[in-house]
Amino acid sequence: MSEFFAIDIKGLKKSYGSVQALRGVNLSVKRGEILGFLGPNGAGKTTTIRCLLDLIRPQAGTIRVLGLDPAKDPVAVRSRIGYLPGELNLESNQTVKAALQYFADLRGRKIDWQYVHQLIERLELNPELQIKNLSKGNKQKVGIVQALMSKPDLLLLDEPTSGLDPLMQQEVYRLLREAKADGTTIFFSSHIISEVEAIAERVVIIREGVIVEEAEPQQLINMALRRYRVRFREPIEPLAITELAGVTIIDQQSNNELILQVEGEVDHLIKVLSSYPVSDLQSESLSLEEVFLAHYQKEQGGEQ
Ligand code: ATP
Image (cartoon, rainbow, N blue to C red; front, side, top):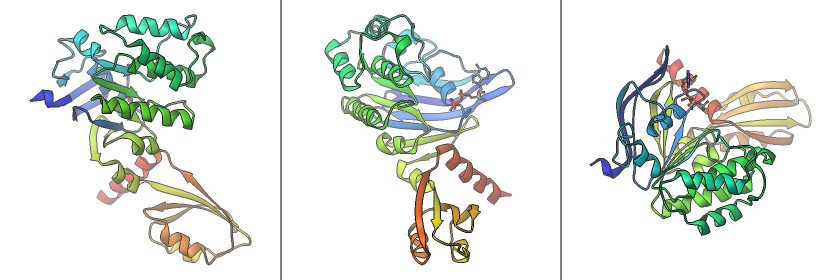
């Protein structure tokens, strides 16, 4: 019943010369699901997505996309997919409007131009501007519009909100939730925890070409580390802080300032800090890479 899955991958292997990018990936995405595909740089996310579109051919494994084999039916598969690559190739002298017309012509589907205009307006994109005059964020918006414009059955998005400001990120999340409500399946790669939290229903983590974890977004957020910079009004002796479970001092700038890394809840730290003369407390969010590194270093350390 592969039609139950929008994506069904088994035993996928892909090497570039001596580099084994995918070492037996098994992955399925249910129809109508929003799946976040996470992993550190070079883990194999883009390679997986490119195999789904038959832009590159794997050496081993089977792939079904919307029930079809992309190597056998690439045109049929691509006509049902909206794809946002990491870097979209755009003709620099074209206007946004002309670029979108070009993408519409490439699709083998009827385009609802009223919907396209809504997308342009909601993303505050000026269709008359030339591509060469667009900022990185505005180019990203063109990529998002072209991915959504044919109301595809499946969206493959490589870091969908890269380069967008926070308000625009929220608008993109709304557009993706609406697409899902219309029945679209969404498979997106990301490095941003808040993005995963905002839209993913399930998360799959790839590392060094194999899937290492499958989780609910909440589990990932619980796994996340937090980092705090604490400044004190006067020099302190941090003994009570060093004794706290899950709290590590990663830098001590002076006796007046500490950088702490906290695993799990921060309640016990806040309570201990309340007995110190704290003049400033800043929280710094960690990237997914940092979270992965800390998580896996700990796991590997535990195994030895
Ligand atoms: P990122 O988050 O940095 O985009 P990724 O998870 O998408 O990374 P891939 O781009 O799929 O990772 O790369 C997986 C591995 O394959 C990396 O080691 C990368 O250097 C290598 N690789 C990717 N494309 C090629 C290529 N065309 N030729 C040689 N090696 C490649």
